[in-house]
Length: 334
Image (cartoon, rainbow, N blue to C red):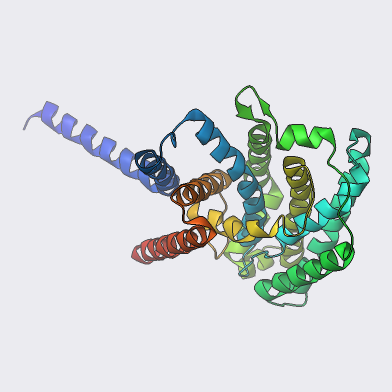
């Protein structure tokens, strides 16, 4: 028997085992990245300059807003209980409309606007969370009803009058401007991502959130207040969505009806593309960001091909079905 041959064989097995472990641990991240790369390469083939630096950075800038909304979804989904928040886009719109006149283009008025945003988001999140966690109503129904209520409030508030006011200049710098070639919103997103990952993986509340989402009975028997955790998840979602409303008005320069409603579907899709389980108990925000970039790249490609909104929603639907089937099949095999 050749000892050298046995040693070489053992090293090969160890390397294969390491590669297999790395693939299993990072499979969803790798898949999301490869999907983005595929779309950019496809776009370069059919559309000129699709892979230019300017186009890539514009895609990342636009996808940052999807990623921020997707954070709201990831938090409530992680808490389990079939959690989804269909009111996030409408919450952002309401905040933008209410704070536009408060800021009136002055940095000095930003603090009152932020306080209004926090109050609006907290109230909406509390209402959603209380009805879901304590009254035991389905999240889909509750947040859909809340979205309708908010839309009604917006319509009443804006009826027969123009929406006045401009964002504070500092919001325009953060949401719309760039430092060098890099959009400033990208730096904000990176900061948010770091804070979120620390909150979810390095704090007791993050462990409780995942515990409740994984098995609420076990979490309850371990002394976790399941209702309070789920309530907190929806409050965080509401407050985050409301603050995003400030960024939207900063990016667009004005507030208008329906400015945030178009982000609801992409925010859910980004979580799915990012490989986050819809049954709860997990959440990887880095993958969700990759999912957001993928969706924005897909949107850009379909628009460039002349498919418009119809093609965009069709593409989103096909991608969602395909990934859901793939993830469910993979889970059954295991």
